[in-house]
Image 1 (cartoon, rainbow, N blue to C red):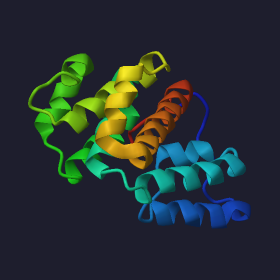
Image 2 (cartoon, rainbow, N blue to C red; image 1 turned 45 degrees about the horizontal axis):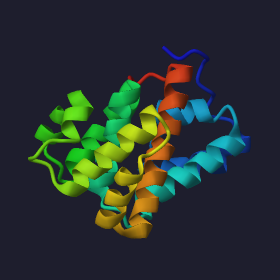
Image 3 (cartoon, helix red, strand yellow; image 1 turned 60 degrees about the vertical axis):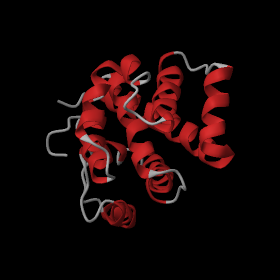
Image 4 (cartoon, rainbow, N blue to C red; image 1 turned 90 degrees about the vertical axis):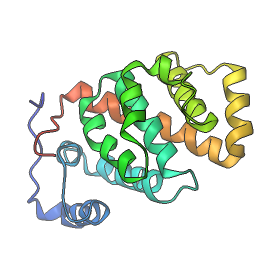
Length: 177
């Protein structure tokens, strides 16, 4: 149950914004969008940022979604998990890897994951729990991803920490999307 009601979707003053969000989401709005609509400028910036993170980066979508799911597990953001676990599977990730995220620390050491997967999980753990990232963690991720994809991975993790905190603070419900 949301902590404040969702905003109305039928305000003609924000029709172009709603159309833009619907275009990014294949014609639908989700509860997160309905909450963001309380502040049209914020919703517009959010839509632009998240659109870039989800559609314009060089970062492998499977790694991106694994990092997002790690953030969701650590923060307890069920809505984020509900939205992104299917995205991880659609990107080719196995259910067994999602299952490992029940214990993110063990997942970061799992030998059946690739070095890139373990690095993405470890980076998400450190950024989410303590904000600071150990030099060794960053150096390892840099050697595996290169500078551009490292920046994209760090940005993705930071973005979805923002999303998790917004979702949890306002009690946005995954039911009804």
